[in-house]
Image (cartoon, rainbow, N blue to C red; front, side, top):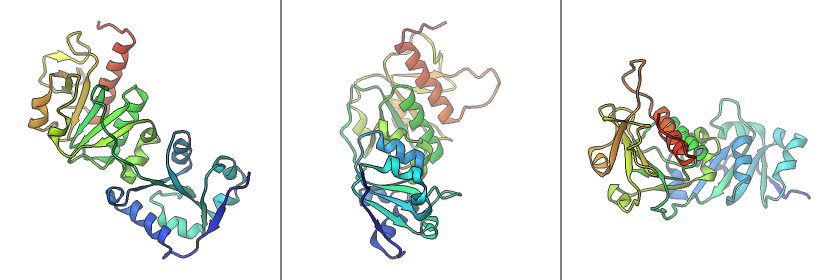
Length: 263
């Protein structure tokens, strides 16, 4: 099966200008309704899930690699561009030579009964992407992002997510009141909490809330929480990185769901 291709060489081509904007402005996806992903791993992960790929963009040298055609079959539009032009678009230290424009990240309706991760002002894109990876790996299929959180579909978060985006329902919420319909207890971490994360009194199933890297959850979000728990740190560190804390909490939920018992 031959893949339909076309060639673009001008940096002023509308597609190239679109990609440049998507790649350089973290929240441009909200305005433009499109997402740019780059790299073979992300593109392959995208094709393994239902996703609306508008166009694939491939550097000439990548296209000349015979292994590239084998996994691009089935796409309706592949644009081949010069290596130098792709390098100018790329945000990676070593341009991967392949990327895709996705048509519409969307903002689906939340499932309020679905155990979810709530992000309240988590600003670092690497942390947000890492939390998405943990959520996808540990069985949490929905993430709700409150204002102040790094854009869920921003290029840095997408790269840090390593394909997790395509297995999650991602919702960017307008404000805190918009999450009040949550139908399970909302649980957060606090170094001052009496309950430890594996305590039998911690509700299960639940939603987990994680906050800003420095100040933690906002007071308003804390007020919505049913329970706070602490993660023991016998090593004496003041606090864990929010992404590490999230991984511990989400794993504990997975353990309980599989019949694990507190020790």
